[in-house]
Length: 129
Image 1 (spheres, one colour):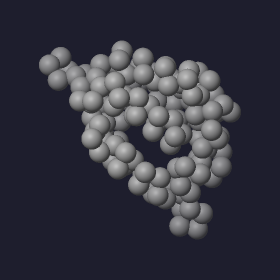
Image 2 (cartoon, rainbow, N blue to C red):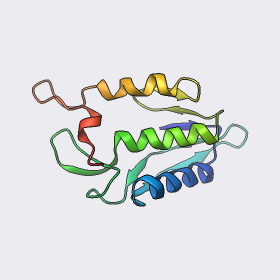
Image 3 (cartoon, rainbow, N blue to C red):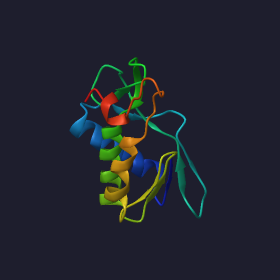
């Protein structure tokens, strides 16, 4: 994901806050997350779960546990981000979000098949939270 108009420290604070409040502290910033730019700030990277067996983690399309952050965890982090920083924008491989359109755009990302044609899998179904 690429986040604009928010610093890495601000985004880290939001992930930690949402992680503590809703996911028993299981959400973390991936170590490869970085901030770029001096005039136009851009944060690039991903969030993940610390443990694949706790809330906030998701399963792969085949059912294996992963430390990828689940669909609901991303939703909650983005909601908190836009509530605190309404000028922020988020670009992911699935959609582009801003404060004004997030609630309209985000639900459709749950209808994208990330499995196979013979074994379809959808993000909301792969959550263990």
